[in-house]
Image 1 (cartoon, protein in one colour):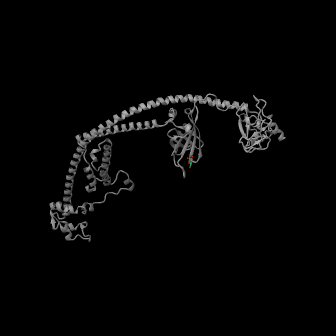
Image 2: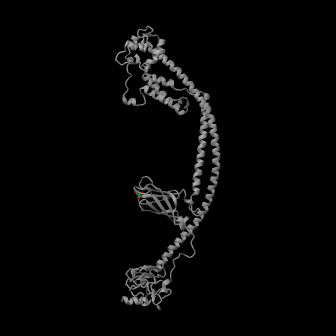
Image 3: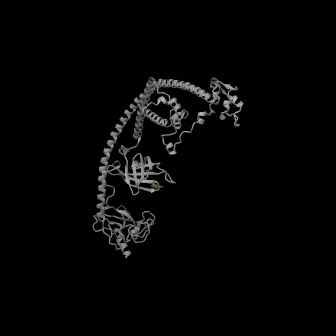
Length: 545
Ligand code: MAN
C-alpha cells in the first residue's frame, strides 16, 4: 500500500485539494519555487548535488539523498522537509517526519494524504483570521504613525520652546550673577560698620565686667576679712587663720602657725587693705566661708520634682543660663523668639527665688552672676547697623538662591536637550512621564529616559531596576529597545538592569514585565512613536497559488 501511495505521490496525483485554483504538477511535498528541480522526464539530482537517482526514486519512501531532497513527500528521510502549499493561507515547511503521522499539520491537509487521519482544510478560515489580524495591526500602525507625526511636531515645538527658555535663563543667570556680586559688595559694606560697632559694644561690656569683677573680688575679700577677724580688732592674725583647716597647705591635719604666717605673706597679722591686695588672691580658691559651713542645707526637693523644669535648684538653672548666654550673643540675638525665651526664664527665676527668699544670699551667687554677666542690648545706633547688615545679608542670600535656581533649571534643560529622543524627537513626549504595570507581586514603573523601578504591591520600599543607559536596539533598528542599568545591587549578583522592548501601539503603555534571569528584567512597551509608515502591498507573505 505504501508503495502504491508513494507511486501516486510521485505522479503528483495526490497533490491538489479539490478547491485548488491552478493545478501545477509536482511531486508531493515540493514547493512551487523548487518544482523545476523535479522534472519527471530526467533523472533527479539531490539538491545538495551529492547524488543523481532515477526520477522514479523520488518519493519512493526510501531515502537516497543525504539532504533528504529525494523524499519531500514521505517521512523516509530524517532531515527532509515537506512543503504545504496551504492555498488560501500561508505556505509552510514541516519536518517530513510529520508526514502521515496521523496529526494534521498543514491547514490544507496535504501532510496526511495516507494516514487515514480525517483532516479538515482550514486554510481559508485561518487565512481570513490572519488577514483580519493583519488588517487590525495595519490600522493600529496607521493610526500610530499618524499620532507619531503629531508627536514629532510637538517635539519640534517643545524643543524650540526649550531652547528659547534656555536662552532666557542664560540671560537671567547673567543678571542674577551681577546682582549677587553687587549685593555681596553691599553686604560687606554693611557688615564692616556692624562688626566694628559690635566690637566696641563688646569691648565696653568687657571693661564693665572687668571692673565689676574687681569690685566683687574686693568686696568678697573684705567680707572674708570680716569673717576671719574673729576678735574684730581690725586685723586678721595667724591664730585666726589657724581656725580654717581648709588652709592646711601640707595636709597634715593642722594649720600650723608657720602655715598661717605664710598665708598672711610672712607676717603675723594683716589689716584689711593688705588682706585685699596680697592675701585674698592666695586663698580664695581654698577658703570656705563660715556662712556656707554654718548655714543649713537648702530644702530637699523630691527627685521627680527636681527633674521638672520648675522648681529646680536654682543655681543649676542659672549655671545653665550662664551657658546659654555666653559669648557676645546677649545683645546680638534680639529677635522676638529670644525675647520670649528670656521672659520665660525670668518668670521661672522669679518663682524660684520666692521659694528660697529666706535663704542667705550665698545660695544665689550664680543667679546674680548670670544676670550681671548678660551683655546688655545694643544701643540704637549699633542695632540699626546690625539690622542693616542683616537686611543686606538676607538680600544677598535671596539673590544667591535665585541664581542657584536659575542654574539648576539651566542644568536640567541642558541635560534634557542632549538626550537622544529618536530620529525626529518622537520619544521626547515621554520624558518626565512614568508608566506603571501591576503584577501579582509588584508595581513596576518605567519612567523613560530616567529609571525603572519595582515596588512590592503590599508595602515596602522601591527597588531600582536601573537608570537610563542608552538605546539598545540593533544597528538597523536602534530605537527598538532601551537599556536601563546600575539599579539596586542584586544579592550575590550584579546590579539590577532592565531591557525595554518597544512595539507600535496607539497607546503608550507597559504591556508586560518579566525577569528572564535573576535581577535582569524585560519590559514590553508600546508607543505610537515606534510605529512605522506602512509599506505598500500588505506584508511579504502571500499565497503561493
Ligand atoms: C527581589 C526582587 C526580585 C529579585 C530578587 C533577587 O525580591 O527584586 O525581582 O529577583 O529580589 O534577590
